[in-house]
Image (cartoon, rainbow, N blue to C red):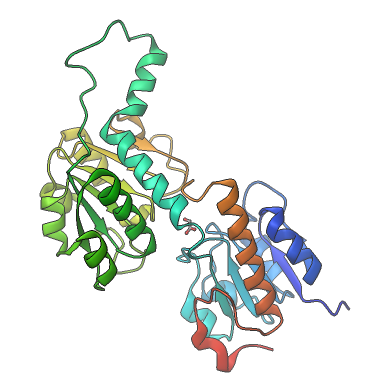
Length: 331
Ligand code: GLV
């Protein structure tokens, strides 16, 4: 038996992380482009010490019951709504994620989506490709100005702050935010104002979602919330698809209740090809790529590997979701 911990990596991640993992662990890497089916994942869990998981790997209590020696789950993502963290903690399993290193890439993507929807870039691209472009049109393709408008940030954590900073410093926007916590830095540095959600929806020109997905936030933006928004408003979601009631979003976009939406995340992912959203001109949908830059994914892979190795060897995780597990970690 190898003295190295046995680990399963549920997809090919950048070599920056895989090299560290291979050097420190006895690693099996799932090389298929699609996630391991649930029964395969369960069977891999039977005798491993560590798991690198992706957002597509659901790790609930029932699945964790198939992992008698698992010491660590290292998620290749900052979000960890695919993992039942209390169930991990109860079983002495450490959980790691990849915060910080993807903040700028994700905020860049949120801004890119904001401007793409506000200025109808994708619609214009389709128009060009279709051959419909005949001349310069004084009344065609009219979008929304950005400078001096109001951005509403729902969830003023690292990524929300980074987007707010871009909007305020670069485009002179007023910043409103809704969060259970006060963000003193956003208030002092960006003049951000904390407001309740109805106020944010009523007063913002652009509403960008950066909240965690949990029972309190699931479906937080639905028909009632769209009705409160400006008809010229743009919704941006780079957080998690289920924050938004997708059927209500399609209705709001179709009826002109809001101007446009720009999504990096959907519910489910990918959306079904007959989802009404896909037929609308005023929505931009990217395939969950906010952290997808070469440098960011390399840094995520490194943190992910370091969390995994620390978990397998009983060290503190560099990015530890459940440090409260420390006194009862599996050895
Ligand atoms: C991606 O969505 C992540 O949580 O890192």
